[in-house]
Image 1 (cartoon, rainbow, N blue to C red):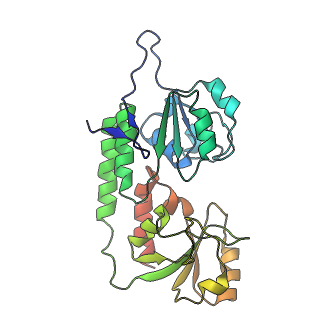
Image 2: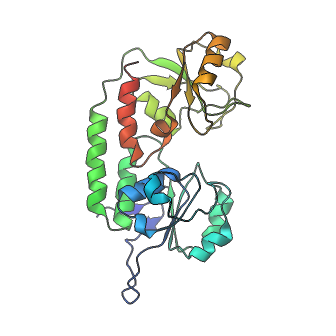
Image 3: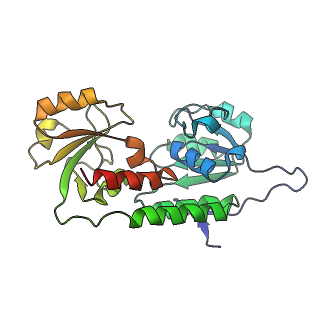
Length: 268
């Protein structure tokens, strides 16, 4: 078995249940896409807490207690759940909150996929820790197949503005997972050139000074709709399209469907 090292370089050991108690792990997930992945790995019976944004698969997670949002968790409620493991993400969860939870949760697993192929290590990490290596390997095979099915990146790349919020308008930098996904089909994300933020704000007056091929409005975290598409097209005079934010930003098992979704986008 390969070393089970998370995004902070912490070495984890395979979980060993208390032989006398016969209990399995007690997992709290603060990451919606990881919650879905855990269910895909047949670990839902060990999930004792999730965020309100952990909505997939609905039929499974509806019976798992909510412990707040990704950034405003209920510390005391989590304490009462007595988890053995906490799963967090560097982008999605607040460091002070995680540090507080780490004071009473024995094992904190930190995730931070930056490019699509990081999902392979993520599957293997969770599969190794929780003893579902075969399930994890199945996901690896499915991911590789979806990745291999992508068409070669075209010689001519497109410049896109990927919008995740309005009032203020916000986009993604090129070192994000979303940007890495879009790059697989030759769509290069534009962001303010002088910003060091991964999710910077911007002004359209600045963006349109650059050659932009299309604008993408994500369905999450802001709930952009076709109404926003129509209004922005009239304002900018550029092609604007609505895209499924879950398919492009959720890693974990959703990334497999995300790659298939990307292949469809590349035909447009």
